[in-house]
Image (cartoon, rainbow, N blue to C red; front, side, top):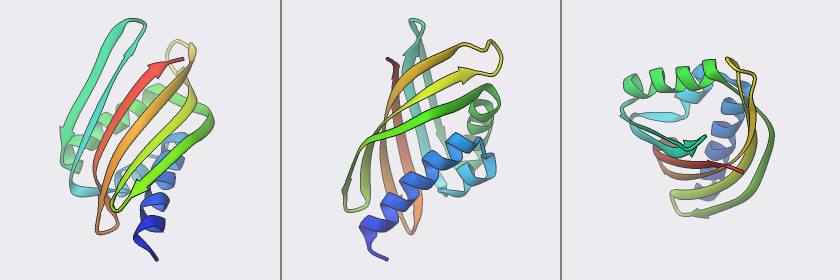
Amino acid sequence: MSERSQVEGLVRELHAARLAGDLERLCGVFAPDARLRIAGSSDGKPIAIDASRVARIRPWLSILVKTFRLSRYQLLSLTIEGPSAAAHWRVDIESKITGVCIPTELVDLIEVRNGQITSQIEFFVPC
């Protein structure tokens, strides 16, 4: 398998696991020493997550899976350069708590090493 197809496969698996709300699949794409950063704004309030190592990433991903349901996924663009990827995607994010559904655009900047994600920086903004 080429490096490009491996990186693309990891990005697609990351997104599929998010859509499925599958915490084990999500954690499985990250290297043990990975770093996850998420930044954006919702309803005018900034949201930021910064965690290193899967043991610290897992609780944040668990909160995302328990709190939000994703639907109407569209991968708008995917650029891959060696072990790096930039994915621009759109999804409807529904709060499982309030029922509010917000169309959202996201950009993931991803680094891959040895078949796992070592860094994911995600930016999001409601459409």
